[in-house]
Image 1 (tube, rainbow, N blue to C red):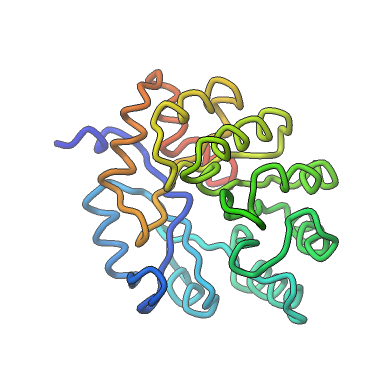
Image 2: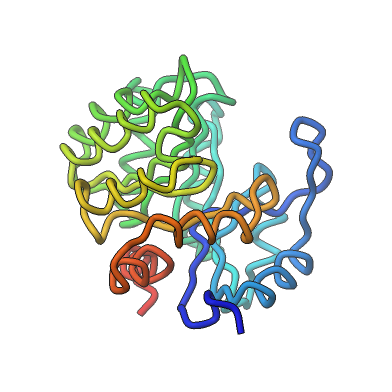
Length: 244
């Protein structure tokens, strides 16, 4: 028996995709489910630029849930959001300011945030790379839309200044959550739990760019209290996404 078999685990950040030449990875829904069984994941929240691919994977599913990925610059952005949130039952929104070239506090993002507020769903943001996804750039939007839950994916990613910045911004804004994938410092997970809140840190692995084995061990190495470990691994996502 592996240590993670004792926990209810929700992966808050995973992908399915055909071959991605940028990262050199791919992942089908069937491959993802095999990993979920190996690492005792109860649910995965998945996303892809191909929302139709994700919709087919999650339709009728109890273990796969979805975020709709949009670019605010797209003229059909709002139509796409309404289609997948209302008709396909997606449970959140994914934005990637770095790839799509905008700043989170720009007015172009406001209609997306308004939709998130209307449907009462969180927004996941890629966080941790200049010039478009530094942690401080999310604070104006969080304050403009205090009812919208915003998750900073990677909680600053690989740079200690950005990791610290993500913790500081989340500490100041109660509607900002942090997700653990791709951030290399186990000690910062514990610091985030202590400073930001035991209810606002979510486990994720960024499959297929990340992998459960090392992402789970990183969270374990943070040496959290048992109850806090349970919260990070699954209970916080369960509560945030109303998966009771």
